[in-house]
Amino acid sequence: MKATLLLEDGRVFRGSGHGFEGEAVGEIVFNTSMSGYQEILTDPSYAGQIVTMTYPLIGNTGINVEDNESRRPFLEAFIVRRLTSHPSNWRMSEPLDDYLRRHKIPAISGIDTRALVRHIRSRGAMRAIVSLIDHDLDSLGRKVKGSPAMVGRDLASEVTTQEPYAAERGSVDFVEFSNLGPGQSVDDAGCHVVAYDFGIKTNILRDLGHHGARVTVVPSTTSGADVLDLDPDGIFLSNGPGDPEAVDYAVGNVRELIGKKPVFGICLGHQILALALGARTFKLPFGHHGGNQPVMHIDSGRVEITAQNHGFAVDPKSLDDEEVRITHLNLNDQTIEGLEHRKLPVFSVQYHPEASPGPHDSYYLFQKFFDNIHDAKTQ
Image (cartoon, rainbow, N blue to C red; front, side, top):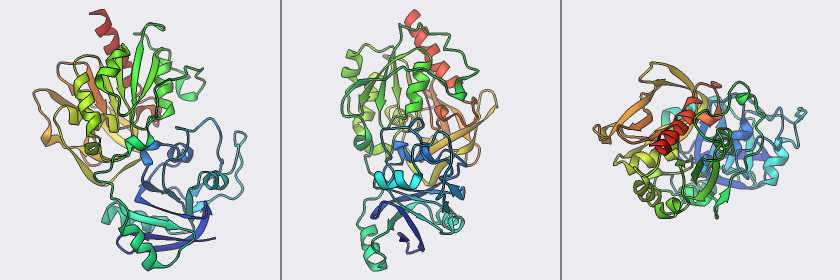
């Protein structure tokens, strides 16, 4: 099949079509990871976006049932240099092309992804369309211009669970946990974490469960009062897609919870927590998406290799320095990667410790959360 990619500024790429024989519009971004395309496809934080992989060979190991980060893929379309037609792996349940078709995700291959990434880096992330059915540029241009921009979009409410549920503990047999004992600070049966689902990833739930927590996942709109009625020992704020300032209902709910229970936020949860503490956020030119971002822990000077997926960041000038301190910085552009309240057991990071790119560089953050819970319970 033929496929056309048209960017908002008029740049055009023609290639081969895969997956769903249709079209999709979204904000175009690129991911610099060399592996983990299945985790990227199923990360709800990519809702509303078209993802370009910079690594040229995608689909070599197909798709398996264990590595999904959510119930289905949430991205709009997929762009690769080459999509493998004959994948091979003992864990594979289906080829990537079949998976994309089954979930109605259009894809394009055979284009110069290096040129596309350079274009996004110089012009910034923008709206685009991938179409396998319409190749008329005037028609495609009208569809792009008629689509919503990312700024101002509340996508968390579109990807969140509709009802609260208890996360399954299950057994953990993944490599990233092989040399890590269970959390030492929490009684296996005595810790209850309520996790806000703004687009929560499965591996976050695995990490919380690995430390012995009983986890209740709640919708993004759950009020602070309803969360407290569940009698949690700690509150987790998950990752998710879209503009954090558009999720104003969550900001208000989290503001009610600060100071009442230990809080830990990741990615969108980090941004929502910062907004609840009175800060502001802003849109990055092309965001941070990949598994190789260097972040410095300010107190120790230690550098962590981190996985990231976000298009917004916290404005450092908007922070109340008497209440909040910066704990981590991105070494590529000096943006904020971590915050901590000076007096309360409340902290967050912009990156994804559960993705384990280091692989264990950032795992201490979960232990810190449970240490805070233990301290709060014993006071």
